[in-house]
Amino acid sequence: QTGFTALDYGFVNTASTMSDITYIDGDQGILRYRGYPIEQLVKGNASFLEIAWLLIYGELPTADQLGEFDDKIRHHTLLHEDLKNFFTAMPAGAHPMAVLSSAVAALSTYYENDSDPDNPEHVDLTNIRLLAKLPVIAAYAHKKSIGQAFLYPDNKLSYVENFLRLNFGNMAEPYEIDPVMAKALERLLILHEDHEQNASTSTVRLVGSTGADQFASIAAGIQALAGPLHGGANEAVLNMLAQIRDSGQGVKRFVEKVKNKEDGVKLMGFGHRVYKNYDPRAKLVKESADEVLAALGVHDPLLDLAKELEEIALEDDYFKERRLYPNVDFYTGVIYKAMGFPTRVFTVLFAIGRLPGWLAHWREQNLDPRNKIGRPQQLYTGSPAREYRGA
Ligand code: SDX
Image (cartoon, rainbow, N blue to C red; front, side, top):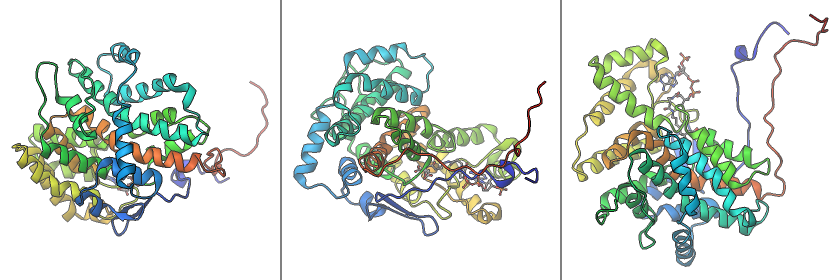
């Protein structure tokens, strides 16, 4: 022991695991869901639920499988009426991610008789329930935050259409689905569906490994995702862009502050634990940002600011030396904002997208008979044994 502490070693927080679900090559900027390149899945006509099935069960669904899956989800969208009181009881200013996580944890109360984590049929049924109800809970958290009445789901609508109506419809008039918005949101949700062993997915796996059910594991994953270094970054990017705009100091001055590490400020939406190249998802989101905003008839100066920020950073040695590129969170917020979502709901949208990946990893691990409780290894760097001689 030479007086070193854990911080001297650089806190190495990795616990390796194996999975068949998603492949990432951080140097090449490659992302594949069960072997399919993300670019093909997003640019094809795949639906969010089709990809959810692929991630959970390993193969693309047949038309019958997808039809039955979609139909079951539509018929599980209703929440127990009792749960609505939950939203009233939550503090008025509660962050939608806190509401989402708490409501999901509370869901297990209603399904104790058929949510046995060791019963494959129960696991599939809980997948259906969570896929069906998370968007409804998310929409209610949004409606609660803006003081509007909750709507009931409409089972005639598709997954994404239902979610848009629950968020933007109201009791006074029929809601007209904007096909451009629905298609853009479907693509964004597909881009978020899985991403290997990120912090929130690792949390879901670790909690699940203790024998906790899917509700508890997903509730924990939502909390992990909320962190500003993880999913919470999409909200932090919008706040950063607004601060740059309101400061009047311009992008160049902000970049200098980041390089000088003034007040610990970071370029949110940049950098990644794995991608040391352009995040392939960020490329796809950036490509669609102009198209979606134009189609929605929205011009947002924050998008121009984001592009200016990216251009300056990608040319700057500070970012090049550290291999810092835009990640999935850098451009998504500008699109969500153009759709009409409040900034504090952005990470909730990330959670809706990531749910299939979480469920796929939970199922892969928990239905494997070799599964053992998670226990990350530790490198002890503390004091050697010593005698207690009393006060
Ligand atoms: C997501 O894991 C996943 O797959 C996550 C995700 C998913 O789909 O699940 O992809 C989603 O979480 C994307 C990341 C969103 N987070 C942000 O955008 C927050 C801003 N980014 C950083 O906080 C950071 O880049 C991380 C946390 C994302 C990654 O951190 P790393 O790889 O551990 O990098 P590091 O902290 O070791 O930094 C290396 C150097 C340091 O500088 P020096 O000490 O060497 O001088 O790069 C600097 C850091 O200060 N750095 C940044 C920076 N990110 C790293 N400097 C300014 N701005 C940044 N964003």
